[in-house]
Amino acid sequence: MMKWFKNVVRLLLLISLSLSLSPLTTAQAATAIQVQNDTKSTYNALPGSDSGSTPVAESDTVTSSDSATGDGTTASSNVSVTVLSGILTLEAVPNFNFGSLMANSTGKLKSNTTDTTGFTNGTTAGIDGNDDGLLEVIDSRNMTSDMPGFTLTASMGPLKTIDTDTSADLDAILYLSAIPLLNGDQQNVSNNSTDLSTQATTIDSTKQDAPATVMNLEKGSYNAGIVSAKFNTPDSAKLHVGGTNNGTEQSSKKRNAVITWTLSAKPSVTQ
Image (cartoon, rainbow, N blue to C red; front, side, top):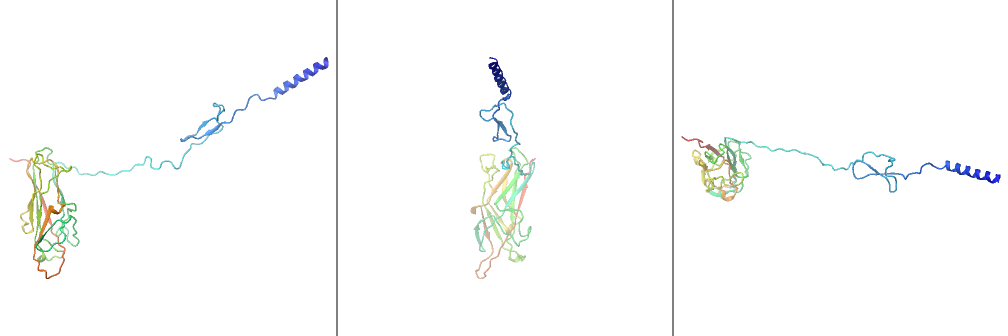
């Protein structure tokens, strides 16, 4: 009986010793780092793990060298304008090119691009003409419908060659057709039911002291702002070249004539 009791005590001691050597906690499943498609790493536990456990590692901010290149890029440019008020200005005058003509003949306009190579600027070549055929005036003297009015005249010199031999000059006559007068919106400048246009006119190089009238706008007949016409079609202008042609001498001479345009204001107040 005593021997059986000692065996039971020994067994209980072994069981107690075994329990004291067992782990006091259970191991948790490892956590993992999951990088999502944003600029910072987020940490999520693997399935079956304790979602409240502390991450086992941290990650630096995720960056990419291939990020959108040009997002947020800026550039600058300019808008330039001269604002007019209270003045009348001649903004543009046209060039005329009639191609090749015989002496004592007439031809229609070919283009508005001229070649004055070899001619002298301001003397035998004009310096202000444009290659668009544009004739333009801006009247900013009044912003009401009662505009003061103005005239635009033109005179032309003879057709000259590159050399300075004035005996070789040829007389010429420039015929300009009546062209509608338009504003910046390509509408007629008239402020009533009657459309306005340039005057059909004849500019004779033998009558430089009597300039031809191209525009003549009466007081109160037009609106303020741009007043323009374009001489850029074959029927908008013709040129008659003087001289004689006997057909016995072979020659081809480039010639140029200078047109002088004069803008004159009509008085804004009459008494």
